[in-house]
Length: 124
Picture 1 (cartoon, rainbow, N blue to C red):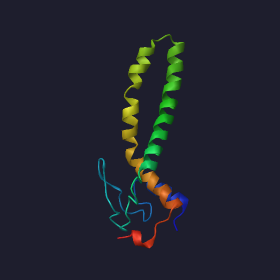
Picture 2 (picture 1 turned 60 degrees about the horizontal axis):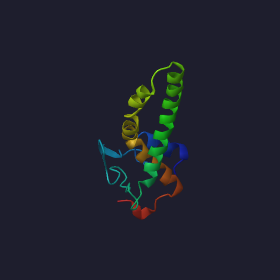
Picture 3 (picture 1 turned 180 degrees about the horizontal axis):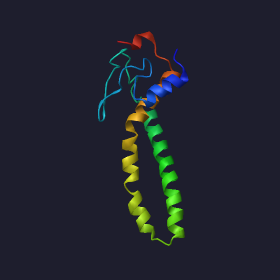
Picture 4 (picture 1 turned 30 degrees about the horizontal axis):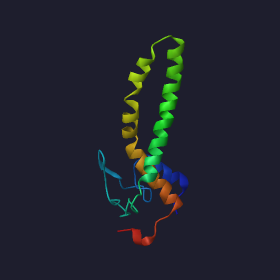
């Protein structure tokens, strides 16, 4: 049984949440189907990545609020037109989910391993 801390750190480092050795991602948006080291299958069932999508959405919305609310307040007090805020913030909802894509999937695998430990037949 892996510790919670170890599993979550492995997720943030984009490693297999079980062994911590194998990489989860092959290149830009391509994942390995199984851990190259321990053989654990990353996508455990159909619809598995729904949790990763939720994590990515929450992180994106939180960052948008953290960035845009103070910016909107400062622009309002400085009498700067709102169109500047709108134009400056348009790329953020597109860029932020792409930036957190890898970490959301990897972090979701780590959470899932803690909640639902894999059975021996899920290896190799």
